[in-house]
Length: 219
Image 1 (cartoon, rainbow, N blue to C red):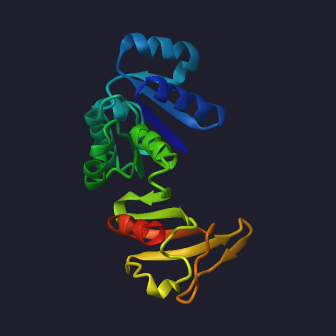
Image 2: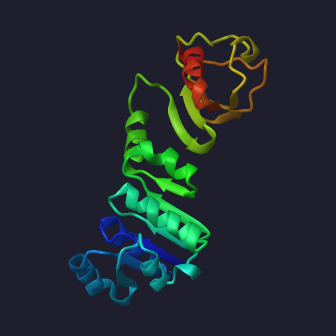
């Protein structure tokens, strides 16, 4: 597998270094001459000076045979251009872009970027998991289809206690997939299943119905 990494900042440097240690064929592209010289001292021939947004640079880097192009500069617009050029000019099978502003996720996806990664979103998700008032833990979010896997703990004062699931008014776009009882027993719930205090519920929900699901299970 041949991987092109565009952007020689800390992210690009450590990504390239790790991939090389794993035995991958990698080339790091950095346009700043001074930074490029510093990188070349350690990474040697695996560093190329040039602008990854330009066709000529990507051509020199061998983008036509690259399996993956990863754009991790500090500029979202540059990352988008790099991936689009790789995708449309060199038919790169997979493009990955760092997104500094989470609001840009949607436009990157609409424009054909295969994977977008935002450190801001990753940090926010960790913060959300420790806010007690939220009481809903996101296990996984599939952004492009609007679906989340969530985890909810059932408290002793939950309005859902003692009632069959079919009577709770759970939205059609929410599925209770698993109930973990006493931390050791897994229950596949169905319409007549009744929740108990201390149960942990794993659910699949549309993003639009998450708040309603939380009200039903926690009040």
